[in-house]
Amino acid sequence: MKRLARWARAEWGLVLGAVRGPLLERRLRAVPMTLAAVCLTALLQVVQNRPWGYHLIQHLGAVRAEDPLWLGLLRTPLSLFVPALDLPVWGALAQVLFVFGIGEICLGRRRTLALAYVATLAGTLYARLGIALGPHRPFGLPGTYAHVVDTGPSAAVVGLAVYLAWRYGAYVTAGAVTLAMTLEVGLKENLAGKEHMAAIIGVGLMCLLSAAGERHPYGRRPQPASARPPVT
Image (cartoon, rainbow, N blue to C red; front, side, top):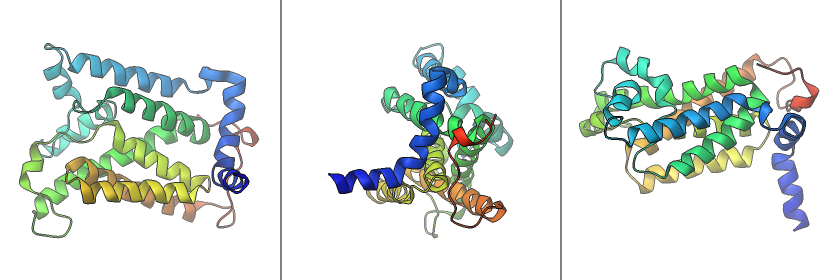
């Protein structure tokens, strides 16, 4: 147990240290953007399950590869918060609360939203590329996927989780999330799993760009948020 506790401190100590101070000091006021995202996700779930609201949400926030690219890009920001109809909404709400909350405290609101958008956009664009390649080419997708609605908050959550784990030195966690998504693709052939992998690749490129642009020595971990000026 002591060995496990030491490993947990080494793996998650930095991110816990960054989150603990703001949460103890400001509580829910530390994550207003995250609370807004959770409320928006819950609201969209309620609306799309109403007879009058399903088509409204489909027109505003459902992205499919068959849609014109300009329309898909226009709908993508809202699609981040449209939960899948075939999955329990409580899981999506918990994921958004946990991962977006850590991101808002550790990275700031703007960067968290930007990374979430990059992850979702990577999955959206991959679906179009994969269908264009066709099912018989590497990374290709069958044409029937063009009618499938892109993944909702999950791609953003996966991308953010990997970035946060990398940023705060939780490399085992980053590897575990990536491995889980890889197994999902292998065990369950669906568009969502492949879009999750595309999101990880997109965020991985962001990690490389961030590492290349850092002024501190390579491998140095970031300071806890309490030691840095707040980021908005």
